Length: 77
Image 1 (tube, helix red, strand yellow):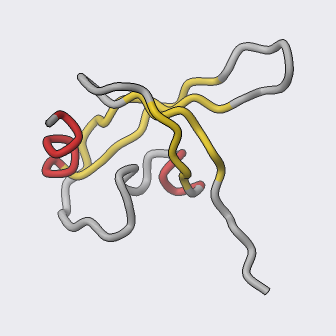
Image 2 (tube, rainbow, N blue to C red):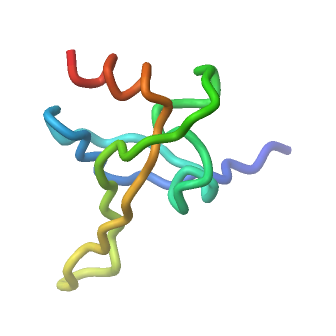
């Protein structure tokens, strides 16, 4: 049995349209590229924010996320 250890969040990339994506805990806490596990690069830079739900009737929480520079440039296109 495989357990999905991701969560659905609203991603707000810099200069891009908000959209729903799935992230891992490492991505949510800014320790891994938010674009995806298949990308490459060494330096992680600011890649906008994700917002997580905190429950019905509550405001979402914003989390700053990071990505490889090439991934950020690809998102801006």
